[in-house]
Length: 404
Image (cartoon, rainbow, N blue to C red; front, side, top):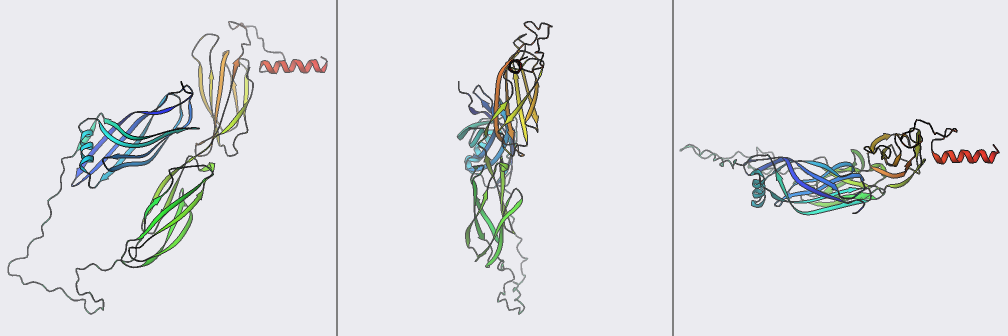
């Protein structure tokens, strides 16, 4: 069995609703799946990303991210769906109708599950079902509105002229030229980068107005403006511009990038992944039961804001359930008292302000019985006050060296 491996199971809609209005269908729901760790070790820093979900030829969800934390066995992730399909294809309508009827339907899904030093990507057609759909697809297109005919006998009316305003347009019903309107047409960004890499944002800018003009395009990261550029375009003209942003570990787990004109904006999310630092935990590997022992992280990342500790300890004395405890500290030290002799393991994750895992470490050993077999009431704690057997041996050796 591998140390750890991730897969996605049980794709379904816990909630699914579809309602038609004219030629459009509004789809809402809660897409739920189970991420399974089929290995023997937990996966820290778990994350689920839905790149896209397509029904027929229509994308109904994209770029959704969910933090899963430490994945031991199975964990559920859910993504909200809320989209209006203006002109659904026959294939899309058929698959939506199938879900509404309580049947299984095939959706094209591109998704990714990942953890520290581990990732799995799924891109295929998957069967998705809903146990309790709520649909109303009986709506139809409204009949076209026919303008009333003028009464018989009314003479045709001549449109008024321009009143001598010099516009040269004598038809009041014609549409005047629209002023320049510089818009963000599309934005292309990478799905993910490694902390320290540069994000390049490519944007297509278009003048959708009828006149030439200029405007300023701004670039922001997490709501803070980083750069801007002026563009001058003729009517209907387009141009490509680029912005760059250098990432750091503080940007993990993701950044939101915005490209905006005075008329519209485009927002995208870029995952920022970290190659977690291997950290060493200093402390006794042979601690004595019922005594405080301190463990400290060495060589941790400079920007760690908190530490998540997992403490595991078997009960070799009574055979009872093992201890499995999680603690969070802002310091790089942890004081632990082991209640029973047996094997132990301590794992730690260093996290930044965004909750991204930037360092991992572990230590394991055996808790020794200081009272003797069967929890003998005789206290066998070394007289020196040592907290572990190795510390007691060092104290004895020091005394020998000093001639005591």
